[in-house]
Image (tube, rainbow, N blue to C red; front, side):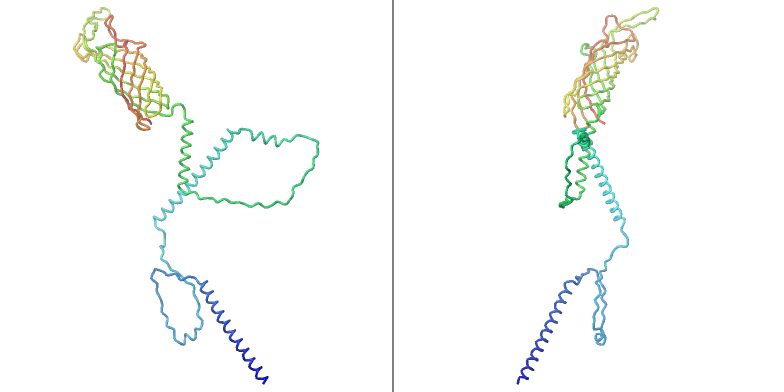
Length: 383
């Protein structure tokens, strides 16, 4: 009886061990399957058409090929054999842009370093050098002091690395604009007294205020000048045309040895050729710019008859003269753009000296001795 009980217990124990082994084997199989699913590469679905080869396996072959060999997944994509011309040009352009931006940033950094050195020199001068010299030159002394040797143990300090932001194209463009503005301001400060040059075209009406018989017809001319915000220096040429009505004249109908003078009245045309040099002070530098200054001029005049006289028919040249005149000028300029302006001015002239080549009526007043003015408009173009 005891033998049967012992035999049953042995059979039950063997059955439990077999079931436990089967459970362990199934658990291991499930774990292996999960691990294979986790680490197996994902299946890539290709949008390109692929060729599938169907293989029919006979029962004999399936029995012989009990194990399946896994092959790596290969993705075949269509790609051009060589890059197109547009891709090559785009790549070259991008590389050139990167090189240009790199050079610009290098120039900016070098310029800033130089500016900082100059600013430090202006602010501190030789203070740092003098301080270093005083620290290096120690006073001589015979006193002996104990020397404390520092500990060789150095506590490690954390190293903080700041994030280096990448420089975008907009940042580079902003830096370039700032550098150009600084260069422009520096060039404006370092430019000489006159940094702007201009050309002016002039037209106006001349007039002799003290002689109603002299009627101004027209005048025109041009000028070249240089200026800054407060001062203008200009030189130019002006041609003026006058008509002298019912003027008295004296004509030598004889010779120098035996003069025979004939007097009379007639109409004459006076042509005035004038070169001038003017200095003007610009009171304001805004859009409206009033000016006030002085002018020095040399005037060459020719006289031609406008009607029949004792000297001949109309168009006969009767004499010439030269004069040095000084005057004042006042006007206003209106700047329409940075380079173009229009204006109006008044030139009032006084005679300093004159030389007349020709016969004049004794006691008569010649135009060279009279004051005159010129009222005109002008257009200026800076270059």
